[in-house]
Length: 459
Image (cartoon, rainbow, N blue to C red; front, side, top):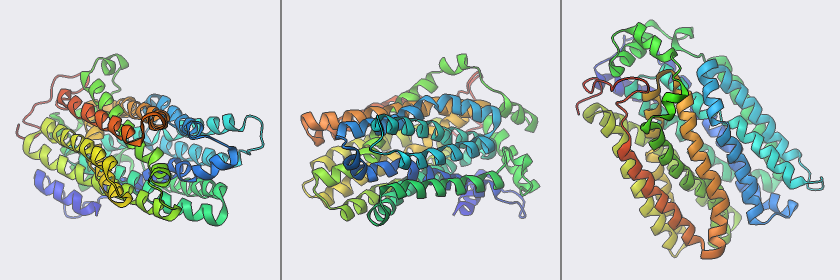
């Protein structure tokens, strides 16, 4: 899987490493894919078990939405400090700490008793702290990508990492439904926590912060990573690359960047749309479309599997366009077209008469949205050098704020104007997010002059 992607990228770039070169970077990308899946197992499980939690705690849809939003607020608030820590400490240790943290608070979700005083507030607090722990996952992953993955492979690498979102979310409805119906909803959180702790331990054992530190990386692979990085960034030599990677860009430069604000606004829109699916799609299919538990789980799984397939496809397409047309066209065009397409699917899906057709069309909308995923993260890795964790954390904060808005706002819109209106609002955000990409220029690095276009493909 990853090896063939790497080989293709290397051949097209004219930078084929020695025959004996390793591909450890792709092994670690695969494990980031696993951690990504586990992270979404831990966060989406409440959406699936929410029906049973709400019944035991006597929650309304709006109260359940507040519990879901608590996770997203914690997740959003700690994106920036989490990203900065990833830049300062490195992705290996900070990811291991984060996985342990979110494993503990996933388990604590099951410990809260409905008979406890202020039980709902306890649920809110636990989910907020779970979100704080999970905030590290993608900024740290992006820091890893900036250190380990050449620019011309970053679309594919990010695509595989975020395919874990779809796989984790897709496996969750069937897995959690089975556990809940056979063992009870609390066991779904204990099992999710155990899986996360094991995955985090393996990450700590097999990963390193930089390829130079890893005993399994061959000289051929190391040379390919560093020489490709030098070529794509327009830097003169390996020492220049190392200096750029280590440099932490000051916040004043980050906050003055139109690129950063543009991708953050667009990612806010992305997050608003995505959390329609993560937070409310299961409830929508069960309550509004009238499906039973198993059918709802199956249709929810379809949506997330389409996400999983679309994410790496979008990354590969973006990388190919970067090689042919340059960074700006390669990253921005995929995001613009896919987000605009998502808006069309959302509108058509909400109007479909049959539950099956609605599910398939809305799944198309989720897939179209996730075609754009790698563009966001590849751009932040390209422009931020040694501050890729900080910049991607700032951007991802925007997405989670969008998610927090949709988990709270969606049931309010639905109760007043109908569920179709909720999807229309999401479609409007998709259009805004698409057009915002017209501002983004990946050829300009933070704190630096524009990159030489000749080093990024033919424009």
